Image 1 (cartoon, rainbow, N blue to C red):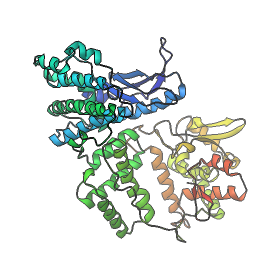
Image 2 (cartoon, helix red, strand yellow):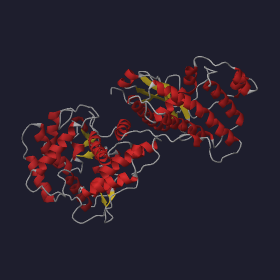
Image 3 (tube, helix red, strand yellow):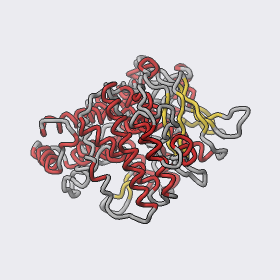
Image 4 (cartoon, one colour):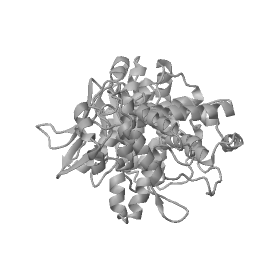
Amino acid sequence: MNYRMAYLSKDSDSSFFSYRTRTPSDILRMLDNDRALLTFEQCMGSPAFVVTAKIGAEVKFSLRTRDAAVAEIRKNQAGTALARLWAARRSPPKRLSHMQIMGLARLVHELYVEEFQQEPGERAAWIAHKALNRAVQEGRLINVPQIIPGQVPDECDLAAQQFGDNLTQGINSLPVLPDHDQGLENRFGLLCDWVLDQNCMRVDYATRKRLLTAIAMAGQTGPRRLKENAAGIYGTDTFLAQYPVFRSERTLTEVFEAWRTEVQPAPNTVSTWRGHLNSLREFVGHEDIERLTKHDIVGWKDDLVQKNLAAKTINDGYLACIKRLLSYEVDNHRLRENVAEKITVSTRGRAGESQLPYATEEVTRLLTLGREQTSQNLRSKAKRWLPWLAALSGSRIGEVAQLWGRRIRKVKGIWVMSIRAAEDGGRLKNTWSERDTPIHQAIIDEGFLDFVEQRGEGPLFYNRSSGDPNKKHASKSVSNDVAKWVRSQPGFQDPRKAPNHALRHWFKTELGALQVPDSLSDAIVGTGRNLKPTSTGTTRSR
């Protein structure tokens, strides 16, 4: 996808921040609707609002705040909403059943009630709103103001102007016009867009027409319920009971692709999670998320245990994957329950299973092996320098494998390496990973700075990556190659000592032995609140 990252700006004639981003090129090619509806809740004193933004080569709209912190929050919210919108536009158009269409109309009824039942206002306002909706529904009015989800203007004057004092009689006296469908689109089109975007869905032309008709019905039942609320009636919502619950029939694949588009996880995660989903799909015999039950997830979990997979692998891999995807559907109001939520493999720590750091003697041997790599090719250079950088900084091997020459620099007279996501699409583990870490004098004495000068400002241990976020970054292959090389060396086959990560564990252990304060140690190795307690009450760096 070729589009510029979103950013904030200010126009010369406004003090408000604006949100701007380029529309993905593939969306422009398939565009069948030139508007995006975005809702923003109250934030740090700034009021809630709804915006309808034009979708052209660029999407731009005001965030209605002068506060930079609020603008940054709303920028992130807009990015999430647009990612969901792009996912909806990229999905193939569907033809929905009548029951599914009525289930979507239920969402509109619920939107009316949830937005306004706390303070429904005057009954007259809902009577007027309902009257205009009915006139459009029956094809007696065409050019009526569109309904913006979450906002209902005071339409009492407009209704009186159109129908007179007796609304029912006035509506009945109007003729039925020929362009009925256009009136539905004008009045309820944004509500239709809202429903479809919430469900990351596109529908075909015939389904949209039927959906607009169903939403027009919800435009009657929602105001009727609010009329009751305005009169102090808050009992059972009998109007809601007439609608079915929407069943999307979304597949595991569709959910995963929508989540992937929005979250943009690391390519390695994408590959691994697809394998987890294939495992679940093969076990239950289908991929309809609505049909998944707690019994299915428990049976799948038990099957994985029978295949002798480690409890940690099942809990942190397979189950974590499906839990996250089902939570994503629940959060976006497309699924009522996460049936995997509380299902785990029972486990307890056992002696002889935890990961161990290298011994100092092993680190010495490994660094010596690195020093012996004298070939001038990049694979050899990675084996030469990455163990040294990891051992004497506590960095993850994937972090130093992404180093660029321009990020080896002096800060206040000290040589540091700036640990950042590689400029050509690399990734770091978490927010605490980004840091400046001092380069140990021993590494400098070994001639590392000469190597950096030879390589220039670009990548040190690989040639430039493709930059495609859907592909593994080139540094991943470098890290894996070093790990295989370490494992192939005599004395480095202990399964409890990860070939690369055991260097990080050793460094952290040595800092503890030297009584380096935890805050300083964490800053050097790039850990924070992600420290995990061990059974002894101490902390282990990940």
